[in-house]
Amino acid sequence: MLPTMRSVILCVVILLCVLQLVAAAEDYYKTLGLDKSASEKDIKRAYRNLSKKFHPDKNPGDDTAREKFVLIAEAYDILSTATTRKIYDQYGHEGIEQHRQGGSAGGRRGGNDPFDLFSRFFGGGGHFGHAPGHRRGPDMELKVGLPLRDFYNGREVSFGVEKQQICDACEGTGSADREVITCDKCQGRGVVIQKHQLAPGMFQQVQMHCDKCGGQGKMVKRPCPVCSGQRVVRKEVETFATIEPGMGKGTRIVFENEADESPDYIAGDLVLILEEREPELAADQEHRTDGTFFRRKGRDLFWKEALSLREAWMGGWTRNITHLDGHVVQVGRSRGQVVQPLAVETVKGEGMPFWSEGHLHESEDEDESPGDLYIEYTVILPDEMESGMEKEFYALWEKWRKKIGVNLDQDSGRPVAPARVVKDEL
Image (tube, rainbow, N blue to C red; front, side, top):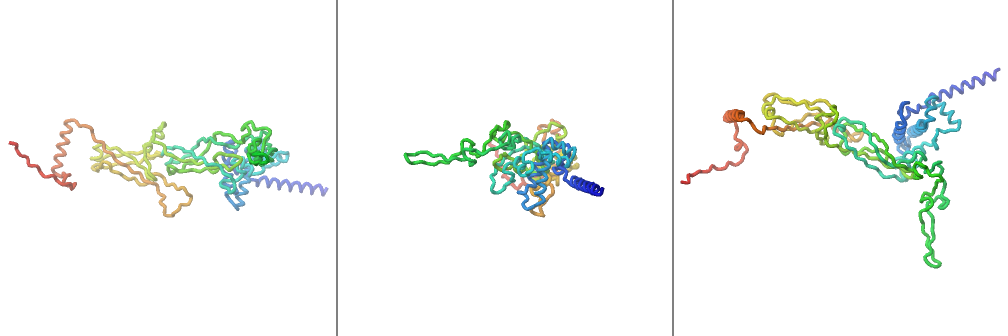
């Protein structure tokens, strides 16, 4: 009876330990920063971003980052496969462990190696960025035009990029069964030595690419039907970028290792270059703002406002200028305040928001306040006046000119021409 009780107690202790381990295990969705409703595209995007962030090549000597990198790969390996994701959603980590013990390791070839998984995404044998000693592919540049409103408010943008990607069907092997064999002609070297007879008894040895394996040193028996054995495919990939408020025209947003992929090299960088589109009225009423036609120079904005002759001369007017984010900037003059043609008014703090490329600014004294809005006034004169209006205005101006008028010829400092003596011809 006693041994039986001991066995029961031992089983209970083991079960509790297993339950504690399962409870302590990191939630795969939280590891990738997702919830259970995440789509396959969301899971893939999260892995691409996080795996680059915590890759050991980018965090040398950081054991915490390395552990995080391994955990991210494990989470993606489970959640990216429909079968294992369903098991995980229903039974959690315990269900995955039982599934693995049943003979499957996550549903992917090499799924236990995080560097192999990383290589399937970016090439280069699982290495990252500008790792020394590894060939790196070319960078890609893409120009994206945005309205000034987006530079002011900031927004999330998505765009399609057609690029070369490692074939998912064969995982970059080029083989339908993912089996790669060594070329029997070049013995895996990719080159062969050929002899050419130049003359009787004289031979020349020439090293050439192996024509059987195409210089790869490896061959496949059954080419992948998706990539036709090329190991890569071209397709459009949706990419997302964050435009921060205040970013400038020409800003370069770099997506590391997001250029053309290949199993033979580390993918280069995708560089997004921001350009400002020409102003145009938006189709929807919400974005029909005066700010659509603002002009930008650095951190400052410029606007032209038209005034009638009466407004410029007599004052007593207001203007409501709708800004790029919809808030209203009010300017005006009281009665009797004159605005000269081409006068410029400065409205402090109504320019572009402050933005800096670095997280830590080079100088603590750097001005982080927003720019200013400069309003240039244009006075619109009437093309013509009615006869009665002309007479009244002329009489009024003559009256006050004689009282307080000025002589522009004298005040300007220009030399006064001598009076001409007019003589009678007779």
